[in-house]
Amino acid sequence: MQALRIYTIRNQAMADLYYHVHWQRHLISLPKYRIQVDQVQLEQVKTADAPCRVFALVHTDDMATLNDQYMYSDDFKADMAGYDMTAILNVEEVELKSEMKEIH
Image (tube, rainbow, N blue to C red; front, side):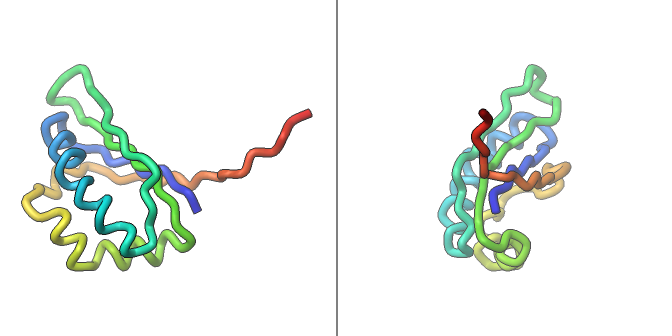
């Protein structure tokens, strides 16, 4: 399954920190749980105090189970150490279909 995860963060500064520090840690930890990260992007907002989003394209064979294992692991706790989790206002996951049929 492939999914787009959208993390809405309180402001640009907290999104920058999450993206540059904590997502770097996720890139190391997530593969241990068979969750592959295809891409991570950071939104650039026009106002520094406006909510800002981080977009992650991920895939695995059992997203719900493997994601739960990761979220309750010591790896996740270490990845997020030093980050104010209340800065994450929302997490949305959009399941994506990766097959494209040829149109004639």
